[in-house]
Length: 306
Image (cartoon, rainbow, N blue to C red; front, top):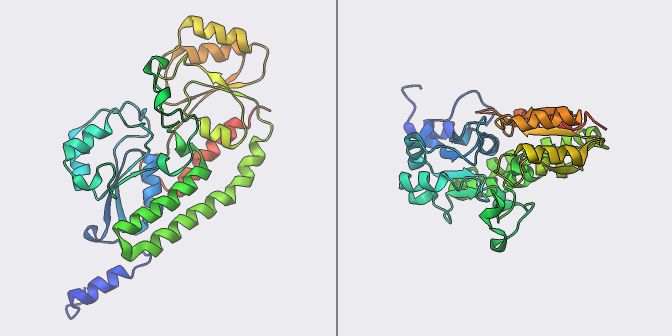
């Protein structure tokens, strides 16, 4: 900085930087955003651009239902101005404890500093309180929370997140809106190609209902689930029943990379179907381009069998 520059002039120069500029925005000028998953982190960085600093709590190679609470999580949330969660009770087993331990009233549920992605869109399989019978396994009365694999819903979530960030940082509202629109256009650009590749795809047996959104979006039939109930590992008897039910049909078996169960391979082998283990989320620190690559990976597998 030139010695003749005043702090006010320097601040004006910093705040006028383009999101595509090579200079970095100082930390004190950014919103401190904590996200529960890497996909939410991708969305926060995509919408917030240079004006946010993002910390992701759950690594992408873990089941976000069952994340272990760590002191570092509480420290991150304590400093946060906004927490971006998937919601619909996906993180119910650990996020409330993290927020309580952080003692940060700005990011509690109901405050502007708490944002739930799933609450911004229509959810599949919503059952309401009457359907919250834990005897039926890992149920979500607010609906299926795994919205991150539906690019259309992620477009809508990006728009809602831009509005929320604008409430917290009104001076960059136009910036957030433009970034959300750019993400919207990116998804629209790829949708025809994704739809063409999945047209006529055969049905899929999922391990857990965590890919329902991407299959439903592209019209791929969901034949059933390897878990007898959500969150309950399959028994040999259940696998045998699935083999008897689907033998002779065309299809494939898909699980997430973190879902390890011998029944997955045994079922695929008995049915002579392809078995694929795919990521549920983008890598840590991912960009919007990497999100497109994630959907590309799913589309390539879904379109294999016709």
